[in-house]
Length: 221
Image (tube, rainbow, N blue to C red; front, side, top):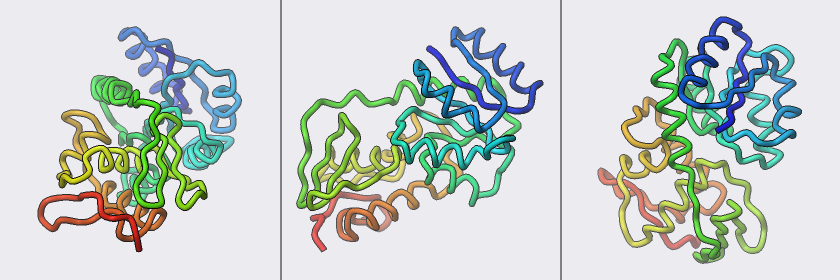
């Protein structure tokens, strides 16, 4: 399993590489944001560990560029930026997880395992609901024949709701699908994803069941 570590703190990068390699991971390290895309173009990486305060190009800009180019590789942000707004922005820009420094290597490895374990292997069937057409294999959505750009997390929430249509999913159930087992969620990231799905796919698509969770609505406005 090959990981790309993007971290400009040499001491931290060295420690993380040692810990990850001890767990059997192959780790390539770069220390500049503007080197990420060229590295990923070479292929072969399963996951990116991305710092935000990088020389060359800020990590958030790297993440936005990566998702704009429709690269679906999982990304875990590792950053000292602990403000709620920063965490929400990172998740909303397409990060799969956000870990605040300082953290233990044990926790990081657990989150990597959870993220890779939770990667979906859906079937090839296209799902249809109202004017939405969802292809879970290609991670694409069209609305009225027009493509809609969703982040990985938005797509994950949507797929959970579609596959459990007719049921109300609790916040915990949805977050387990997003974050894996036994991970602490310290922000209102789920609400952010629900808000953006409604904005992109129709305000009535997702119904809030007060005090319980969310379910799939009719999808018509």
